[in-house]
Length: 126
Image 1 (cartoon, rainbow, N blue to C red):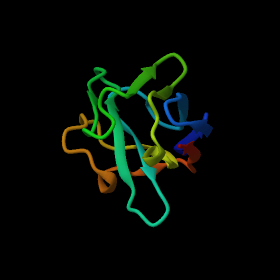
Image 2 (cartoon, helix red, strand yellow):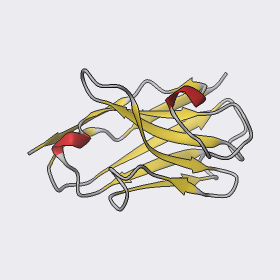
Image 3 (cartoon, rainbow, N blue to C red):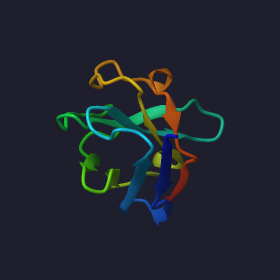
Image 4 (cartoon, helix red, strand yellow):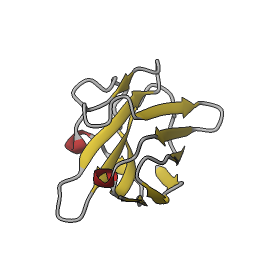
């Protein structure tokens, strides 16, 4: 049974940093597309980073490029999200997700992911 457990959320002032971690179990970790998403109150869920664990290719939207970094640890079956220069608009619930397919992350979007964690809250105060 696939399990994704997020950790590392919290409250931070604008300009600060947080590191989120997603512990994955119940499936073969390698050669999957894994992503981090966020959802602010009243807004749709949006992707903030993705990584193909088969080769390490990473994907970011312009809104976080240069500030967020996604990485993988194959020994621990974890995917981390390092978030720097945080802004108030980065506030939201952050979710980890994985696709069932063995393909890379090209064309990644919310609906293309099959399994989701419960989320961890990130609050950035200005």
